[in-house]
Length: 355
Image 1 (cartoon, one colour):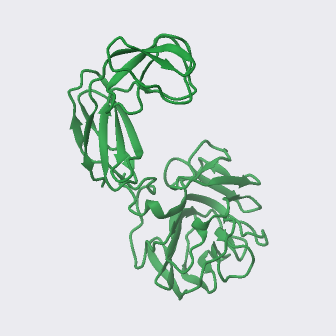
Image 2 (cartoon, one colour):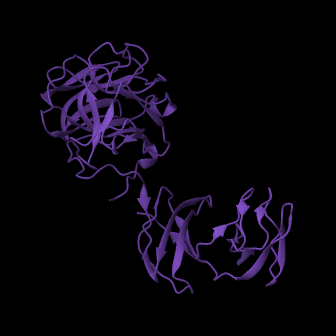
Image 3 (cartoon, helix red, strand yellow):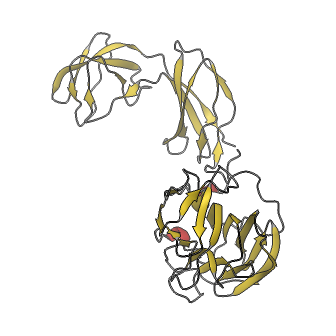
């Protein structure tokens, strides 16, 4: 599955995957939100576009919420809201919300993306617009709202259905409601939702397009290619570090001399270090006899150490000895570690450019 070049702009991503009848919904955006099910909105295996399940809303009073966040305050900028939906029947209300990001009924400063009782797709903000075509029954349909440069457009299965001038400042800090309007004044959405995605700052669609035939990606890119190693071991771990910040952005365990990197990451470039997967020493941790660790910086101190006195590690990392057989204190424990031998030197590749 290819990555999403705009994943860093994704405010909310609900694949709606999970166990049948579960009320646990996971946000797969970069800044994960806690999503709450209200009145029984649930995962269903009865219908799915991707992943074997979807979110089911009974059209009565169930819905989802996420916390109010600046991620849903679009200001004057572009944005995109989209989802795959399945309608078993016509909505019964005028505003069957797919997602409502409003504090009050007033449209200025906020966004309501919805259907009406005729199955036309609608957008209610400072302006109101509805599509001329309808969303079909009993089939999965991609629907989207995308604002670009002061014009908002509605799409049904990739076809522009309506557009409206929209220079409204989306300034409301509101709790997003999925499957219901914010004040519960209209019947809720009835049907199934898969892959609901909100993207801030990006107009993903400006003209007719072909919807993706795979689920929306939960990562930006992945490190390509295959590496070959000749380390004297059979099990390894590859760690990708952002070349700009040095932060660890992804790992992969593997066996054998050849492996495909394919670490998923949002970094623009990575150094990939391959090492033997002993545990890194951690503070305030209980260690038993013969536990093996290596220092937090194995490039500077390329040795691993065996626990020779049980107990809990200290609040700061020990000063590691570099003489084979030497013993190392750890917090209150004297001679807690013994240097076993030199690590097979970790090998760093990079910078590698994700794609």
